[in-house]
Amino acid sequence: MKVYGTHICIDCRNYQAIQASRGFEAEFIDITADTANLKEFLALRDHDPVFAPVREHGGIGIPLFVREDGRKTFDIDEALSMQKDISEYMVRVAKAMTI
Image 1 (cartoon, one colour):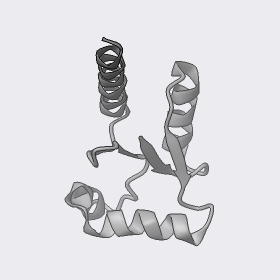
Image 2 (spheres, rainbow, N blue to C red; image 1 turned 180 degrees about the vertical axis):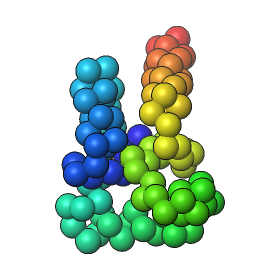
Image 3 (cartoon, rainbow, N blue to C red; image 1 turned 180 degrees about the horizontal axis):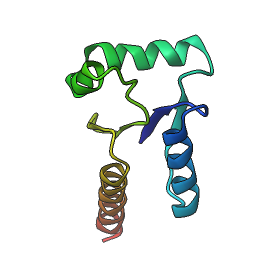
Image 4 (spheres, rainbow, N blue to C red; image 1 turned 30 degrees about the horizontal axis):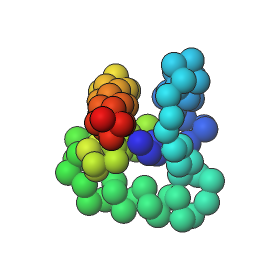
C-alpha cells in the first residue's frame, strides 16, 4: 500500500503513529519532500473522482491510502482492512504453493 501525505499534516502524523503501533507495512510518499512526489500526488488529486468531495470543500486529500489494486481511500480503518485482506490472501497463496 502507498500512503500519500506529509509530515507537516497532523492527520498524516497520526496515521504514522498508528502504523508504527500496529506494525503494518506501507510506503509513505511525502508530497512535500520533492516536486516529483508532489506532481505524482497532484496527478491523482486533479483527475481521480475520489477527490471530488475533497476539492469541493477546499481540502487537500491527505493522507491518501492507495492499495496495490488501485483502490483509494482517505479512511485509515478502511485502509487497514484493505491491508489485512492482502495479508490474508498472501498467506492463502503461500499455503497453496506448499501443497
